[in-house]
Image (cartoon, rainbow over all chains, first blue to last red; front, side, top):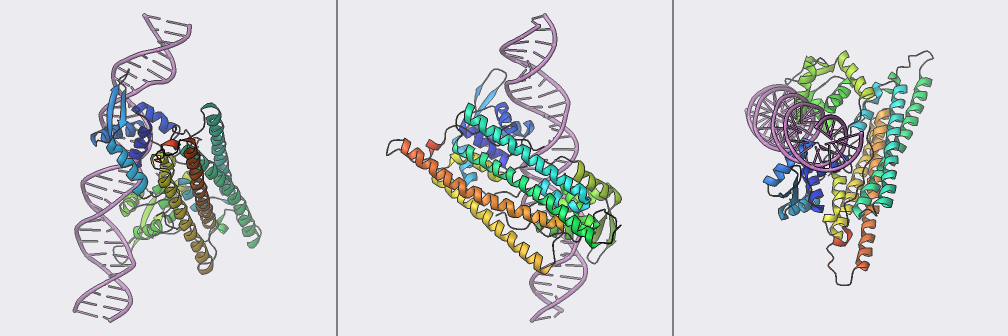
Length: 203
Length: 203
DNA sequence: CCTTGACGTGTCAATATTGGAATGTAAGGT
DNA sequence: ACCTTACATTCCAATATTGACACGTCAAGG
């Protein structure tokens, strides 16, 4: 239930309309907590019904501006302080688990693609950093922390993907030397047993 | 729609029952793609209806074993090769965006907590690594890649959280020196403007 | 005047996810 | 025999998320 808290967090800063919130979800929060229009407007109504928000003014085009209430601020703090972090889903890592379904060549290509994606994201973040520092004045403390997290995360992903691609290449070489010449290169050699990696608790 | 592909991936390795799959979702895949019983058994039925799986045998306690079909293997490959990576949600990072709603002391405590959590997870993964290498023989190539990803990710998160806590502490110190002595230490000083960090495209 | 684009809200159906309950079976130990 | 634990499936209601579609308004430029 974090869409709710994302919205409370944004409205804690200043009142805004659904449209305003949507723009934030499409930019700043796009890689943190994506949300669609239907969700935002729906949740706006729910939050108001629950007394965590109140509509404060009507603007030009039927625009409705919402502000957080005291109850909303309390709930926001409660979430920040008391709630357990959620379980994460990683589509990208899931694919890695099943990479043995591809030929080694395909797997290596996939990993290179991952490295590229991470590099592009990293590049995008450095541009955000530069632009924000110069044009829009200094970021807030937490803004900088979030940005730095993104920078480190994308850097880590790129390094890992490049390492993994090389690792895969080497494993493929080993496998090729272990089987008689002329054996099929379909990748079955690198396919011994489903790994049990990825444990460790989130709590 | 990746639950579907997680299940196809597992069944591509060997036939299994819903119960077998559940155990994997609770262990290996717990931090990659969590799933509940209701989801797994439901999806098993859907996948069978769609011809991507077939029930192959009935065991002791009403146990039903499923195997992947050729169509399922095709779909699995399609997903690995063609599908765009999904958008990610990060509850933890979302909180960072709104850390200015807490007092600096509380925010620093939160970041320390994050560091602890990451460290514990990292520790858990090193144990998995040790145990698997010694008891069960070498992991499959992709198993090792996934494990290494987890290791690097948790290490990065811990380092970031420790850095962020220190950064927050410093910012707090700066703010304290900029306001007259005796000013309230509620953290409002570090609260100027919502950052616009976190952009960059996932595709 | 007319068109285009940004602003702005609302609703709908389909699918995904959570969390729990109900039900029963086989195996192993005491 | 009895108990406990692991095995195993099925169903359900509530909530969250996706991806449209429909509707209407204001401002600016040609």
